[in-house]
Image 1: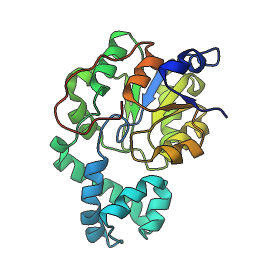
Image 2: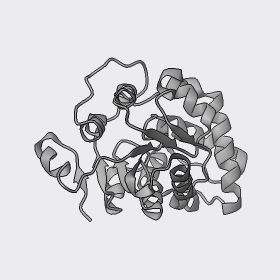
Image 3: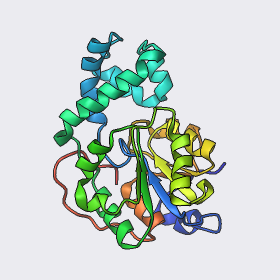
Image 4: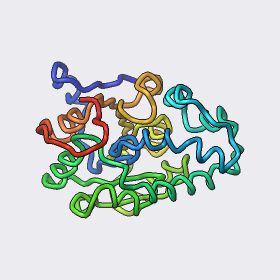
Length: 244
């Protein structure tokens, strides 16, 4: 399967006859819209101490970006029965620290422009709805057609199918854009187009190995494909910027 990377040089090719604008654009949240990996890496050892799994060095935490979610749990020697409880604890901790989580640079204007252009947008995430809404704020939330939150780590394919029933949009007419291998796999299982961003939890080489249908290397490239125009540069407050 070809991977269509975004760049101005090959714009005609990547948005050519095989590219049909989706009826519903579905985003993952953490690592795709929100720059939460630094928080996750900083919090990981505290969670490990509380839940009795192996702690990691800063160097090891960075290497986790090359692993799938399942591989990370195996690497950290986490029993599978603990995973749902750990995920719930991470959501609770993020609620406590929500002021530390910011959107990637360019995401807010992108979402605003998608709403202004009447594009249908949804979010599927294993994070809690209240966390997502707190980071987005009321204005951006108003432009989101549907939220499917609190999904099990490997339950996003079912959420995509449920979203299809809620919105009346076939999964084949959706693109699911995420930052992890499990997001690509979920899109495939649900029959949606698999989009991947190169600035999130999994590194680009790992994503490329799973051959997503669309690979976005910068936030501006999301705008170029989804709207046909770049998002103008805007100053941002806090948080690390996505690659651009």
